[in-house]
Length: 241
Image 1 (cartoon, one colour):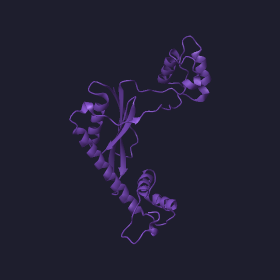
Image 2 (cartoon, one colour):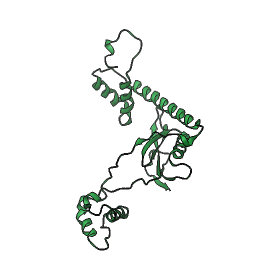
Image 3 (cartoon, helix red, strand yellow):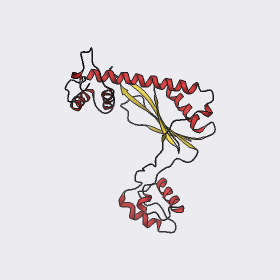
Image 4 (cartoon, helix red, strand yellow):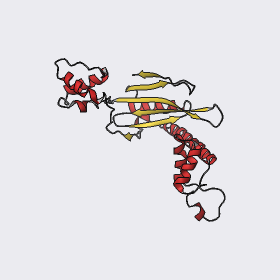
């Protein structure tokens, strides 16, 4: 740990919580060898932590997260009255949508909107054009084309959106992978991320959907049917409303 030389005599290495967090976050994008060097530069101590210690920390913290996920599901299932359970969501903010068309097409969009029966110019998708027409017919009739260019899909009142995916994590053994299943629940009030291994994430997802949408709510599921082999990069999108 930083300042380890200032501590009295002790056995083993004492690693601060911040250093543990760095050691677990950096390997998401970098190999262990690079993480070892970066942490040495950051702490100004060449031997502050080794590659093997980084690997052990990542595995240990992963096990802690998996245990916390399982405990949370048990707490949810132990609720006597799920209808009164309050879901902790991260507060939703106004999304920043990507541009619907290149800036070069703005003049063509303005010209098209000036006609009696506007048609989408080439390069503008039908979905984006429908949002533009709807905005022009409502309170945004005076919006310039540049502002309309940043429109995007919005979560509707009483709608809950669930998105699922898989993350493949390389194991120490050759050709071994750990599959982490992740999901994101979003409503007009907020959102929350879920993660677990195996079928545990399905329990999380089903309980969260019940908490957010109830038995008769409007749920839109966005999922990806991913191949088992990480070398295959193609995917198929599945949408269920």
